[in-house]
Length: 88
Image 1: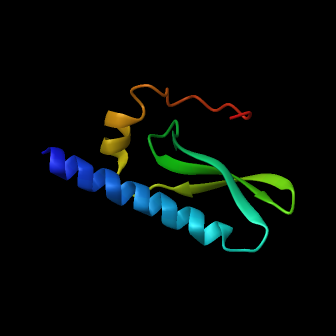
Image 2 (image 1 turned 90 degrees about the horizontal axis):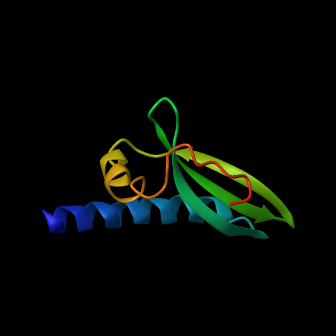
């Protein structure tokens, strides 16, 4: 069971890395931070704060349906789903 969780966790972080890489390949774009977010409808998205040409912007990408259980178990235990601070 632990191996399955570790494998799922690794796939999730690889997916996150790929999403970020796809969006920062443009010259002058940098990742400031990212986090998963649970929406009121129960869906999940990856929220990335990026900087391009000295301008901050937020990118949101739907998280695939294979990861919600992992997020509920490991992330949202300590991070309330309604936590949406613009200053994060």
